[in-house]
Image (tube, rainbow, N blue to C red):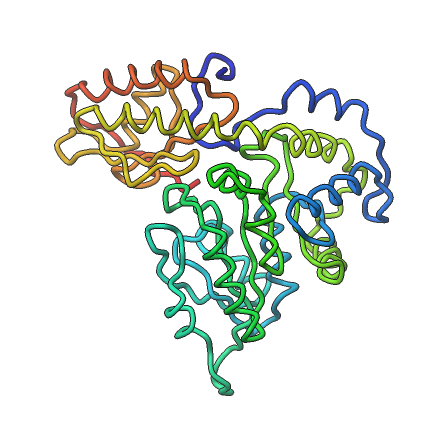
Amino acid sequence: MSINSVIDLRSDTVTVPTPAMREAMAGAVVGDDVFGEDPTVNALQELAAERLGFEAGLFVASGTQGNLIAMMVHGGKGDEAIVGDQAHLYLYEQGGLASIAGINPRPLVNQPDGTLRLDQIEAAIRGDDAHFPVTRIIALENTHNRMGGAVLSVEYTRRVADFAHARGIALHVDGARVFNAAAALDIPVRDLTSPADSATFCLSKALSAPVGSVLCGSRAFIRAAHRRRKVLGGGMRQAGILAAAGIVALETMPQRLRDDHANARALSAGLAGIPGLRVVGDVPSNMVYVDLDPALPFDAVELTRRLAKHRIKVVATFARRIRCVTHCWISADDIREALQVFAEVARTDAPSASTGRAQSY
């Protein structure tokens, strides 16, 4: 059901902890995690590593922090990382790859399915020349936010991993929503992550925990990552209160993600039938991107304002594009109500008075 009588489709980051999570948080046994003495954090890290097919895990404040730590472990100042030009790591993490890690991003065009072409990756790898940075990392994103929640396949991930490892390059998977990818493919999540050298996933998105992500890798990698987390201010001390919700999230939430995907498909099908709105591409997971027809006399920001008057919240990502994201607090009834509002608002023939700005995430 929706939260506070508002149908909030802006992001799955708006999810709130379930009653079971709140109960676990209240009763969590805690210790000093910087010393490695918080038993609940340790249990979360072990569970996450097991689920993703790695030796160890590290609880971090956010996916952005986890991605940055991974880059800092895999590469150093003056090295280079191959990334997608639509990747969250490249576009929406404030340039930390360059400004903090000192690593040069080498962006390649993301294909409509979220992949990077292998021949373009090969062409982008630097040769042995003193003029060039050294290619150390390839980063993939699964599911891919800007590409409509696209799901990268096991076969593709393995191909990139094999390609990278044959050349002494590390592969990192930004798996903020990788449990959505696993649900879409009906496979264990480790199949999508274990071919890589490291992977992050967010507890605070579709899994509905209040905060946090986990970075996974080998034991040696996580030892190095622990040091980078400390220098970034990520030592959270008695963090077991947060980790307790993460454990419940991992144990109870992945199996219900297919419901979110079904709701997204229902939303997509309904929006496709409304004149003036065009669904962008397929809807493989829990994201629906919608373009406004040029004939509509208002832009995406104005549309978000009109919808908000009817208790519907969405995000304007471009001047004439919005994004809707389904999650555990959005029901099938909410989707039906939202579609009625969309149809009503799209029929409204009023000039745009928008002066707002599109949002990115």
